[in-house]
Amino acid sequence: MAVVRALMVLVLAVATLAVPPVFAQQARSFTVVTVLSGQGDNVANVWLPSALIVRRGERVTLTLRNVSPADHGFAIDEARIQEIVQPGQTKTVTFSHRTEGVLRYYCHVHPAHIGGQVLVVR
Image (cartoon, rainbow, N blue to C red):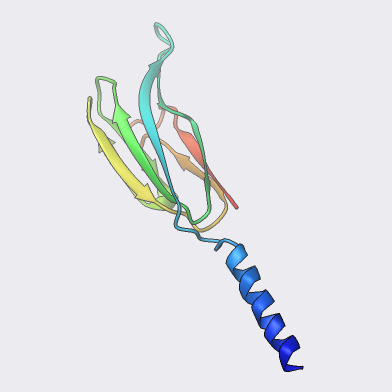
């Protein structure tokens, strides 16, 4: 009986090591750039790329680049991020999110500008 119990403990220990933790401390990096899109009266400011996919609990680093001639905001409410990026400036923000879902990012300075989303998956 003791041998069976020892084997069960060994199997459980190996199985536990084979499964990665749910909130792994992996890192993912993206560069998000503000871009002027369109022509004439139909010009819009856009943060690109407009969609990012990350795993829950993953450490995410975003490099924010403003290549336009005006200040732009970058905010993700759920991650408590709110930055103003001046023309020609680059800023870096880091966050992780522990629940699956969609996090919207947007320019909090100019609400009409086009933002994007971070899709947090398992």
